[in-house]
Image (cartoon, rainbow, N blue to C red; front, side, top):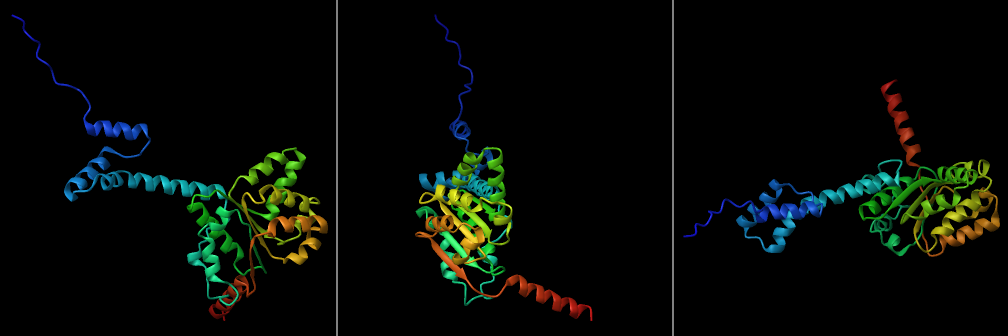
Length: 272
């Protein structure tokens, strides 16, 4: 007579264990407790297979999406935290087209590779607007780089000295949106960088019809040649930058001057 050995308890993984294993392999950050909660909800509410799957992965997907947005914002190097939601639309309501600016946050101009040029005197909110548009672009998944004209030229001038200009041009050529703020803000472009026009042209030319460049200027186009001191090259730069670009010209009162006067009145009132 043959006696069969009695089988002991099996250690095979359960379906739940296998699912958690699969999530780990796919690097889906979900805990056993979160999976159990989703399963309990599916049983309680009678969710379809697709609804159950969405309940399982929605939260970790949202977390990863938010981390990606914050990483892109960090890499963009914005100078300030600026949102369109906090912009004072009433102060210069007659000179700022709110609908046109809010349309920019859709990111369509970036997907088309169109340039954006904002011209206006100091203090009318140009930097606020462009940084807000840039943050929205980051949220849409676009790589963005913010810099001032002076900082850009200091960087490129240094690259001439150590012969790394080609790599710096590639660096500034990668982002889907390059924001160059404060062009014409002071004389650094001309006084400290004799090749300012040439370097700016190289940047714009490298990105032309491939990536969007947003340039924010305190001076109108007809003053660029005098400002940079090289009329023929400036004309070539303008041709590359302005062709097919979205151009916003803002005329109005200065927010900063208004705030300064208000603070002065407040100070006098509190210290008679």
